[in-house]
Length: 452
Image 1 (cartoon, rainbow, N blue to C red):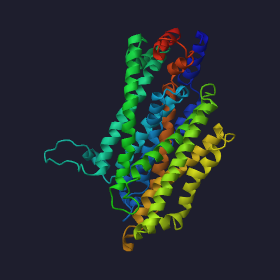
Image 2: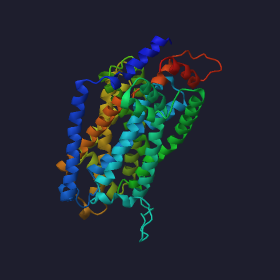
Image 3: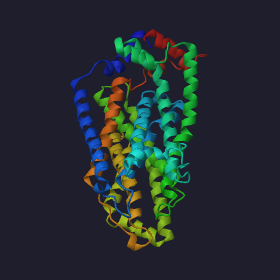
Image 4: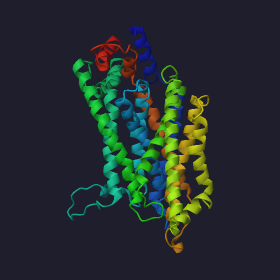
């Protein structure tokens, strides 16, 4: 590619950082207002107690834990998908990877807040951390909730590092196009990057190591989250299939969230030349495959429950499929299976619009799935006198809405301050593939120096 072509790529992808419209400020103010409302509601809940929520005996897990599992699942959109695409060297991944990796970091941050929100005394959340005390009081390491703490913090640290490493050359690019305080900030974040061959080799090695290491970490995280349920003797929870079932559902919802984010970026940042229909088609195929896998797990779970004919489990099965939760259950089936199968299995419908419609359905359906895993089982335990009913209160609904607004706000701010598409990776992908004896990252050195 010519120097003019490199300049066009840099100009297009750095435009959101260097030019701000009134639409950006309007969106940030609106989303910020929703987030502040959610924070105020949480403070109001802390001040007045958990009685404001619909959480009652015997259902002590409801909206908050539903959101926790949902957001941890969404986090699999980025790091896991990006790492796999990097390792198999899928060339179409280049405009997609950073869009995906950002979702992981922010979704983990939001999901990790919900165990704290769910605490009656959230200012004592540090009791989850195994630190030495005068009374030698330690967390119960046999509790899956403590396992969650270690799994999520490890995954968050690894995901932030996996996101940051490929950002370094682009941060240096912004540094060289900036002045004043902006130049100082981006210069510090770029860690003295000059695009030398030695730096490219180290960056390539570090990214390869992180791509390999992050995959088992990502799989283990949602497996540990599934242990929160499968380790408990509750109807339909105590199941050996929950580990792969939760991991498959997490990847399923993560791909859907990634498609929605890419479509929004393509529309509002005018990235039509970089996010092509083929990217959505490929992700749509992955979404269809995960929809079929998810349907298999649902069928497997229901079939074994029906065949076992255990009284308490049959009670939960009936209340979800033909009782008070039936509308939510069949809506989940339509959103997670019928809609993706109808749209994505037909090539003519597997357009950008079709993929986005199917993805919105999957996001809604997967949130309902998390809710239906938690509430019906807790409300219909082994003895009928322990059965209960849950009704969400405005406090829980407002906080839930605020977390979705927080996700959009964080994503918007990130796209404002960091190139949401990796500039240097896109330039590397534009050169002819037949370059004997030269690695892509070595060639990127020349590209970066051509138009910093």
